[in-house]
Image 1 (cartoon, rainbow, N blue to C red):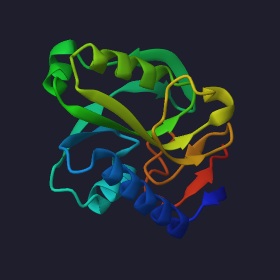
Image 2 (image 1 turned 90 degrees about the vertical axis):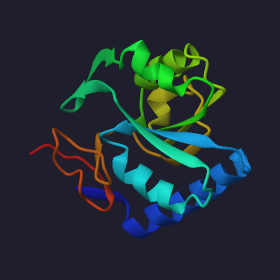
Image 3 (image 1 turned 30 degrees about the vertical axis):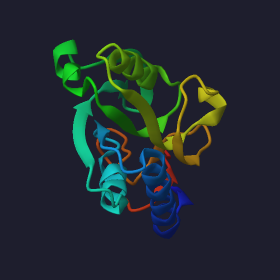
Length: 171
């Protein structure tokens, strides 16, 4: 595997993102809505670096990948589960945005619940295929259109525990 970003580079960028997020919310309460499973490592580091006592954390599981291929179908939680976010400022924390299909579906569903605001923080973006379909308010890194593993991202539940990001090479 070829390393794209080492652990030191990642932690520096996470600290910068936390600072930018704190400045955006300026002492207002907000909820980090972490998308499981891929974003949990990034979200944990980000959450620990946000100094505001007003930040809450919640989790959702959404699926659209099987192995290294997008299924093309997004499975969202039922509307009654999303209703708990009504009247909140929500910051979605995502591991990677490639086509934007999953994120777009979630943003639309949350807006339908009456959230006060919804913003997006993505650790990674595959710019060449995403092309801005969904606005990313806080972005860690842009990456090439290859399958990426490490720092929470996996391939069939493998390589999630790597402390760095790498290009996945099938063997």
